[in-house]
Image (cartoon, rainbow, N blue to C red; front, side, top):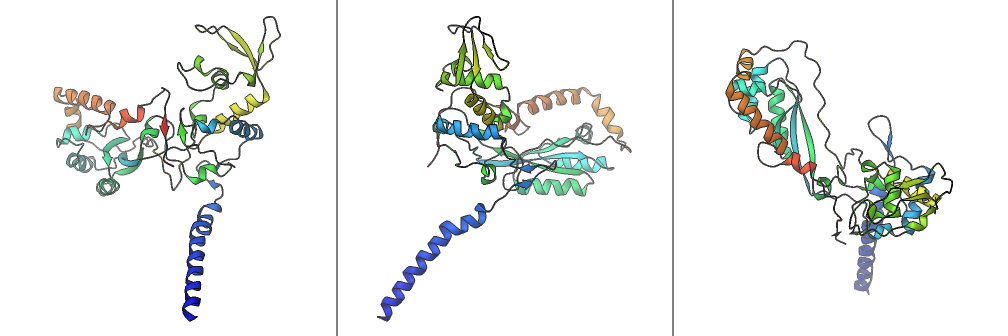
Length: 343
């Protein structure tokens, strides 16, 4: 009898712990999230206007989440280090740069690297390596700023500057994440496209905008005007395009609401749990510029001119290590995209 009671209590305790772990713990961590202030005095995420809220229902009714996701994936991150201010000891800063992977070891050439600020002094770094490099330049009197660079196919395609997190969906109910990509991810569609005319053209007949698009047309959301009919102020003229005749369409209230909802889709605010890359701040105008006699001489030498051209080509292609970061950040696919997300 005593063993039976102990067994019953053990099973009851196991169920209680499981129930707490699976339901109550996530609710305490995520369920109580609220909007939070961000830079500029705004809050994130900001509430959507009424028209966009109605557009969310249209988006849901048309089954758009069956072909589009709203979640940017990130596979990793690297760091860059930028020098915002050199300080008063240019030679010490150049010496640190000369010992780094991007430096040359030539004091004149390394000093020339800081003539234009902010200057990149480290790329493709791990967090610890970036922290150590910042400490070295700080000890030399410079103001070094680390910058996180999110990586992943979604980031490279321009679908978002960072991964999607729970904070992005506070005003969404239900949350239409989607699990199949027959079209591009829409988490940051409003940051990529703000032209309502282009959006309506895509909705009316996507093949006018993207050749071979798999997106079905939604002509029932629009009224087609016949020749001679008076055009209202919100009428959209679709020009002659190959086999498509010129048309004048008028978006319905549902079409306007859907366009407003798509434009409202922005999830690019930097968050603590989802940092994003930011351009380094421009350097302030120098007041007491340090003197370096070898900088001018190095700048006028043929060796430096060739070196500068090679450095510029390497920077435009990516970075001096051959990682190609800048090129990968510019890469973007405009072709129809199909990608099945893990369940």
